[in-house]
Length: 79
Image (cartoon, rainbow, N blue to C red):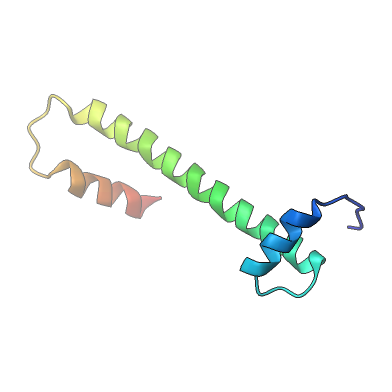
């Protein structure tokens, strides 16, 4: 997709110092990929916290043969 955008030149220069890319296009592609990876990881962590809370609420009053950690590992393997 072709898009024209204005970029902060100082920010681009600084980003280029930290990147192995040679062009602005490659830099923007790398930045977008990194953004998606970070947000996807945040989403996974959020989902994990929700599952943990759900498991803890279901098992809070039970006497278990397994530890909560073992149950979480099993739950993680199923998804």
